[in-house]
Amino acid sequence: MNLVDRELLGLVDSDVLFFKLCLNEFVTFGLSDGIKIYRIDPFENVWEGRIGEIKLVEVLSVSPCRIAFVGTGKDPSLSPRKIIFYNTTTSKKIDDLSFPKTILSLDLNETRFIVNTFDKIHIYETPKFEFQTSIDKETKGNSICALSKVGTRNLLAFPKKNFIQVYDLDSYELCCSVKCHNNPISSVGFGLNQSCLVTSSIIGTCIRIFQINKNNNSNNLKKIKEFKRGTRKAKIFQTSFIFNDKYLLVTSKHKTIHVFDIEKEKTFCKLHLKPDIPRICGISKNNENQIILITPEPNILIYQLDVKNKKLAFIKSCSIDFNQEEQEESGEKGEKKDK
Image (cartoon, rainbow, N blue to C red):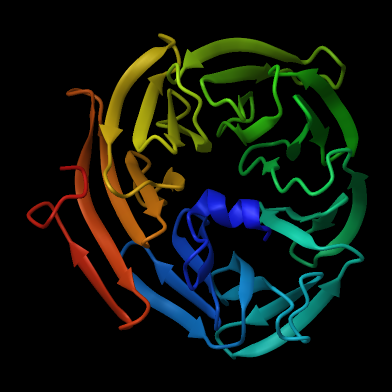
């Protein structure tokens, strides 16, 4: 993880080097002295290990619990160019993979494992992690990429300046390379049914949705929707399709959560959060109407999308104090973060 990534997560002056929502069920933390993993519902610390300075953590499977992690290089055994596969149940290393260049991000779905390095994206087939191919990146050093999570197609999207390239990871062919914005891409994400792709640029005032056609050709990405987040430039942290792809959730540096109605192409509701600024958003594994927001404090906030009243209704918050190693959970009667 480079300085830009840490600034994006709000972690420049923190012992937390990294956090991520994994499998819509766990939050992983890479710390200056190791790893901590929390289950969201019920909220609990499921594993921790003091193994050195860690910058990336990914949950690979739940039973048995296997993770992949990457160190910062402060400890020579934890090179930023090496992935370590680890069984948390037995507390034993399973294997490792080394690369010529620094690893920037990891991702996986049911059949593919993605290793995004400084100059290439390496593709592996799960569960045996067999190497399939590597894709050269023109925009070197960029950690942005998106992997489709469910459905019949394995798709990978990543930026090429102000273009988006989409690869079919079953045929290993380029689906398309289409200009999406006038400025470099800052975020990209797939819909649940893989028919849509959402993008934003570094300006952050405009979010666009593109339809992905089934045939692999240069014209199979068509803009179908466009949303105005605001008039001021803003860093977009994440864009996520929710509620069966009917709504789009957007988090930005301006401390406002936007929910857009995709069909009507307009704002559905907003949520202002101060002083917390959620960097990561996702959908609860146990309830697709519940929204998970993660802030760098770190706090885990759970909201319900109330379609009838057009709002995000607060459910509970889970606060983590790594210094005192205590966690507090508050529900609707506790202190709300959106007051």
